[in-house]
Image (cartoon, rainbow, N blue to C red; front, side, top):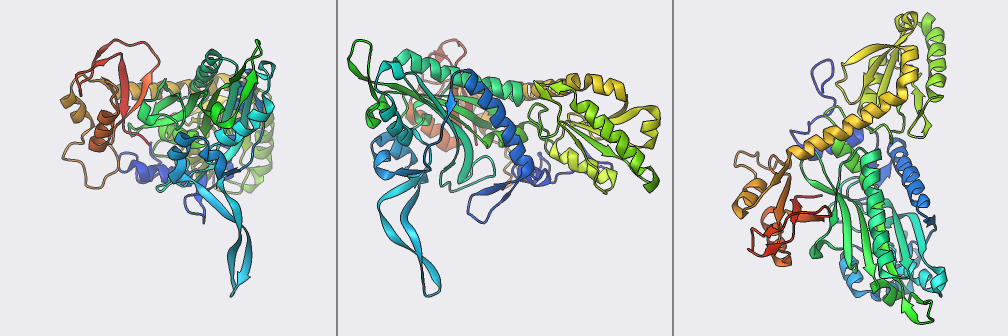
Length: 510
């Protein structure tokens, strides 16, 4: 897409430098900005509104399946983490640690004093501290299942950060459940994975592959980890949500025990699952174009923006009155179970400038209204899933009656476009040489260009050896993103010659 002068609104373009394009889209859409704290960001109103809609929809899905919300402390005593050795080892390098409890002024500077008896870890995830509460709450099989979710922030001291995708602090939800039987916990794990997949496809227009992680990619302390994986426009994979079957590992570490129906004392079976603000990054990299953000209508902060075109002061009152009435009519319509979200941009700013601001923010429908449109009883409409100059005159009554269907048409178009892109860059591979060639950029690639011009998803067999996966990661920066849940044909691993039950998804990832 390009503006009237032939230039794109975002430079560099995706093809020129995908990483820089991504950051420029965030800036142009006014989603977030870097903060003075290393690796942290300020989420601005437009970006936070996207997250609020994610919260609203997912919260409803969770509650519809019996889950309730609670909140647990931000600080976790070191001794709690130490109870689960594999878990501690997996997060040790990312932990932020509080060691003092006050400041004192000395020589004009504030100095930490009052060393804590025990260091506190700033929550990287909450299995251990929630497990401590579960151990108190669960005494009998009658107390189960325990289905808890919390909306919170977490801190993981990342070395290399990127807004929304990987920051030192981020927002998420984390579900934690305890069950009387192994099968109930397994069913819960898979149910939540399905909820994430349904949310991604139906609300984000984000096609995903549901699958299990390999041993090397498994959540620390989990028995099995499942995920949804999506392909971004640079052909890298993004892990968009995870669901973990924890077995009895954390229950034993935390002492979550109960008397079963026969009076025997046994440990509970637990799960955890989470999805974060990383989804906003996924939204940008899946649907965005060289003119900025493209918001899926179901999650867009504003689904329709009305832009009055007022070239003469004497028509201002008439145009604004007409637009205000149109706004009320549109808001009386519903889409995806809620009133249509409509914004009237009445700022005293040139119409073309306002239009481009909303294009960069990704608003699904733009309506331009001037005196001539009013005379015809129509609006000049632009859709964000099409080029900016592809606008058409639409009768007011037709627009109002069909706005819900139009928004769904845009939502469906975004999903189909993302599916087509993924299909185009997914290849079935059976030999090591073809695999290495697929993920090796041609020698014509520009030096220091971070934009992949080769590769995508490779569907290849894998014998399951962690050492082989580690070597491929070192050679190509490629890992097994997941073992798909869908049935597959058995075959032979092209790297070891060992039998393989099905093909797995290999890709470079974020």
